[in-house]
Image (tube, rainbow, N blue to C red):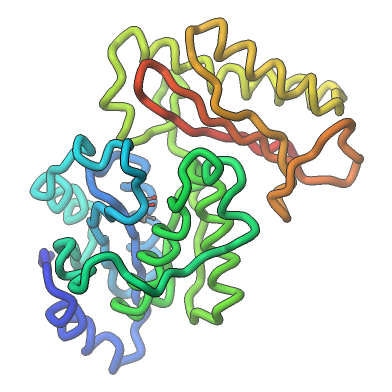
Amino acid sequence: MQVIHSIDALRAALKPYVMQDKSIGLVPTMGALHNGHAALIKESVKDCDVTVVSVFLNPIQFGKNEDLDKYPKRLEADAKLAESIGADFVFAPSVAEMYPEGDPLTLVRDESLESLYCGAYRPGHFRGVLTVVSKLFLITGANHAYFGEKDYQQVFLIERMVRDLNFNIKIHRVKIVREESGLALSSRNEYLSELEHSQALSINNGLHQAKELFEKGERRVALLRDVVIKSILANRGQVQYVEVVDQKTLQKFSAVLQPDVKVVILVAAFFGKTRLIDNIELN
Ligand code: PAF
């Protein structure tokens, strides 16, 4: 496996695969890889002739007061993990390599969905994500790309972007990987103290309580939200949002769910200073 830092070198390394019409899988990451990323890499290695894992902490998707500076960085360990799973290339460009002229003037945006849910609290976040993901698609020429469902709104917006802009790439959603405790894996879990970690389990517990209520026939949106909110608040979490949302449109429901809708509950909450997101589909 090769670690490559420049766009030209990556394109040169991938050229033989492109010439032979081989399938290229891309796993975009910001590094600090964990088993959630490992699941994405495994899928790509299984499906594709060649797998590229990008490790790029993308500054334009972070707000001024967010955790860009303290985000964990460990390229060597990331490369080892990617190699152990069978990745062929780790692409780890510098900020100057990706944005040689400073912040890009051309941005990819979804004007209607980028300001919902996470976007309401992280202005500019999704245009930063869509812009860097577009660049990675164009740089690698990948035919397949893999994203985790923990970032539900992110993968939804990426799928929509691919359709809107005719990117010739198949987006694969990969199920959330959880610790045995139920906490969804995230590079940000490292910020949690032991106490906060145990309190954060209330997110998944609350989501499961909502799912149980739903399975027993509860269709009142307020009740499904409340059970999640109460679980988090009872464990000293601060709720940023809990919304009951249409899986197909990402629009939020209010009042009572109709029988034929496909629902996902999206959550963002703080434990101490750490912001975590999670979700559960109710099918
Ligand atoms: O989900 C992430 O890690 C990032 O948002 C992504 C998709 C790698 C873009 O920087």
